[in-house]
Length: 261
Image 1 (cartoon, rainbow, N blue to C red):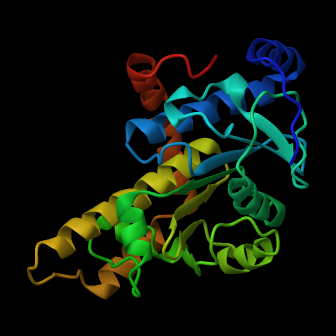
Image 2: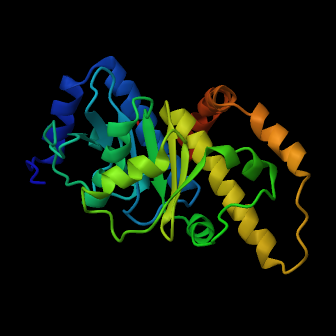
């Protein structure tokens, strides 16, 4: 993917002039999501990715500029690409081919995929490497069990052919373990995807902690767990995301300002 190289100041000026109000809003939420991932120590240097579909464009989405830490990403530095891997606005930054393959696959297959988050956290990778995956040990785990899917490791995701298998394995689920690799969440909005990945990452961390204690595990009654999972719908997740987002933005304003630039 050959990208046009421009000085950062010119890039930010041209981006600000060209974008719609809807795009500007999505850019701010996506940049905020990157900063929140960094604040939670879920980032992996400049690796892993979060993408957001642009409104009114079936094949356009935003993704991180490769080479920036998540704590450095701003709304104007996000890179606009299409499903062919072409950059659609001047940028001084490249994108990561592996990130493009994973995220384009899901945006292509799922019209409801407004945002896709992929992480390499220690706990997420650990659980992805377990044959049984996530166990119903905690409420957070129980509430995501029915949304989980699995994709076997195929090496660094730079082969476009892998997109078909990613799409097949995700299906209509909203969460995925990329085996021996990490976690992934899909949401209709950035806010919803962040809430989903937060639930999954918390469940993974709790499972790693519980298994590390070397004591007998207590599992909840499977009927109670199934009923709790049934009652926690995607709409409830979305409502929770909307309630939490303003508070998370206030946290960013205190601890990581500048994301909206």
